[in-house]
Length: 171
Image 1 (cartoon, rainbow, N blue to C red):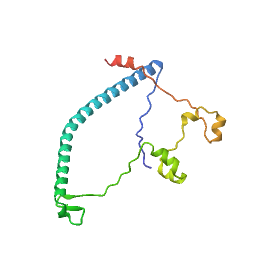
Image 2: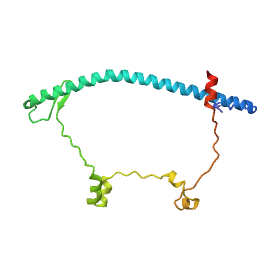
Image 3: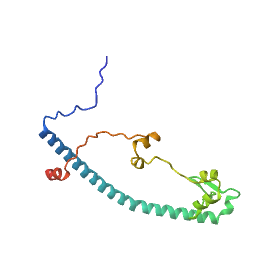
Image 4: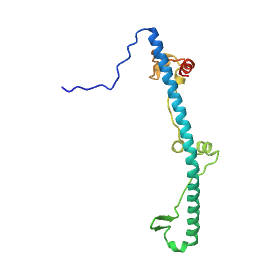
């Protein structure tokens, strides 16, 4: 038989309430360290993003200028396209594509509801239905049972370190 090693670490043997309090202090210190590391990472990411933004902005501007220049060139040479709407070159293709977009007014939704049949309305209006559990929590258990829902109560263990004491201890 082969033995399988577990990756799970054994639980800490808590000796007494003072030891439990020390473990809570350690959890608080860990949470403070994680919070500080996350704040530092966010600051580092923001610096990198702002540096990238400056470099990318220049490149995007250059790319936009080149696209506009190629569009003007293509407009000036439309007879070279013949019947085609695009032209293949060594490094890519340029030309025109038929593009369609639907523009709606502020009253389009109301007008769809007013003039379209229910089948067309359903096809044209997006509605995401989901159960509102917060609203269900206000009902009685009998009412919940009628809609095949139930209230499940359990004791959830928690550890709540006093962050200010843990922060004072770190400094």
